[in-house]
Length: 179
Image 1 (cartoon, rainbow, N blue to C red):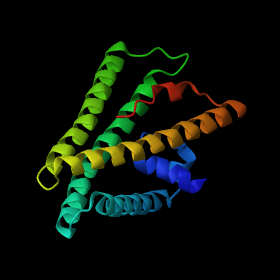
Image 2 (cartoon, rainbow, N blue to C red; image 1 turned 30 degrees about the vertical axis):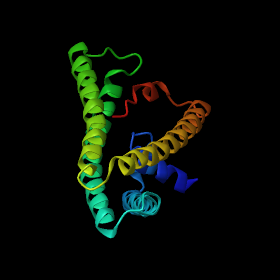
Image 3 (cartoon, rainbow, N blue to C red; image 1 turned 180 degrees about the vertical axis):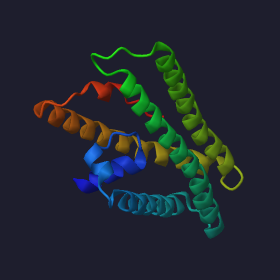
């Protein structure tokens, strides 16, 4: 179960990890290690399935690192925005309309920027992959992301059920806006 939670956080980084997990002093190093292992395994599968040369594999690895780093920066900003938005939207507390409007606009801009990193990464791969390889890579990545979304939904459902069972407030879950 812990591996599933780490996989979820690694692939989506959508801020759905429970606070106790995020406060675990060993969480980030394990999270980073797992993310690196998943990236390396994905690259090796791509090398095999797309019949890449060693040079293409190295270029793919570097391109993935570059754009993955950009996405992690966007995800971190997204978590901060979601936290701020969640604070504004607490039940029983009047929200500052200007603040909510700015935060919502910022969240939407981050979603666009996040999607653009995938587009830009796919364009960058055109320098070393042929169109068929690029399409295959896109398909592989979509499958991986689809699987991550399934894990994310299962995790959210389990976490939400636990919170309701223990009397917690699930209203902040509705503010989760993944980039």
